[in-house]
Image (tube, rainbow over all chains, first blue to last red; front, side):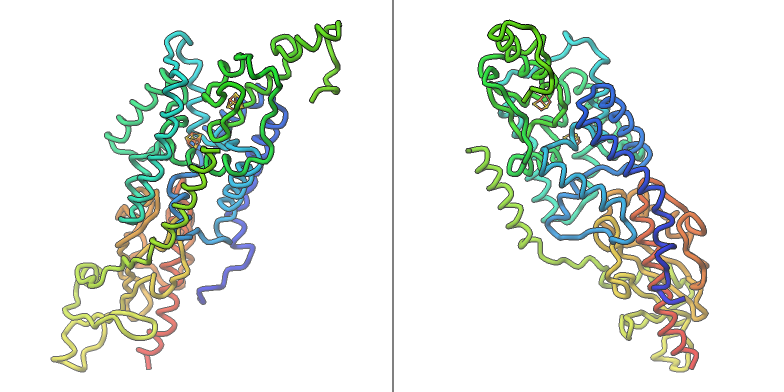
Length: 285
Length: 178
Ligand code: SF4
Ligand code: SF4
């Protein structure tokens, strides 16, 4: 009858399944990231939409950025899975950049899975010149919702009208669904439009990765002139010789290209010099 | 380099607003309508006093008829269990309880849960607590409905109601029985 009579067993039992599934999913995300495997990446994306999205509806939301201002967090012992998830997001972003956006976030995963729906030629590619500035829109949105939150302390409006993550809970008004429809239609034409230009969470993670990324992507000296990767990057993160850390989501597309001894000029030039056609992979890097 | 500076400036701004985000109290100062909903038969309520803080409901104004027995008590979860946080901050719930430890109802007046609109805000959540005894299990998934995808909010609100009611019963009902 006393308020605090719960044993650890009573506290842990309801969370056990949740914790196991989350751990399994995050492990899958990590393995697919380190193996640089395309197949595993798609498995992760589908798992993200199904599990993290529709089943759990637990994504990093702009309200999690708000909590940095009032330091209000859920109770630890009752929300172990949530803490594990947030730790994963922060650590992975500090170490590798926006890995979260590349394969964990269910909305980002959904938009990536939408890619093959329409043929490439119907897509609109934003010119690099415009993209450079359009990228900044998300920071403006982040600043705007932060100010809005600090003035009103209202979480509900940004969560419903600024970000689309509520869609996985399936609770929305007609207006919200129409807005989402427009956004997804736009995503078909301009790839990952929400993630690249609008998402305040992506902006926040972008700031962290810009300041901290420990393990950045290697570039060859040939990257200065070669444009293959720049054209391949679906996130507009490669500009000339440089990778913009805050835009890169560690999708591995360019890293696979660097290793491709048939496409990447780095290898082609190397072979020409050496006069043979292949080097063992173990001597790379 | 410029990018880095911009990023640094942005994070500094974020830091600065932490200071600006001063405490704001959202508790309804005079919950007259909410109290009336919890105790429709009551005609008079005391002010919010006592240890723990509570309102007392009376069938007749005790100033006129001093011997009138209390119908029950009402209290804020945020006063009794302030440490209880949902997904984002405390959920403000006014709980009504009769003098035998049976809940006469609960009213959720404020929350800042991102998914509050389909978890703790719909009346469906509050109504299931009416008639619950303080000794009931209050188990989400048992005698309290699960709302998947908003489990942190539902679990927190349920704990807040359970713990505050048990706390109030322990201190106030024993007192009234004397
Ligand atoms: S940018 Fe936003 S929506 Fe896109 S993957 Fe990152 S967090 Fe998710
Ligand atoms: S292609 Fe390379 S630079 Fe572009 S997002 Fe993927 S990993 Fe980052």
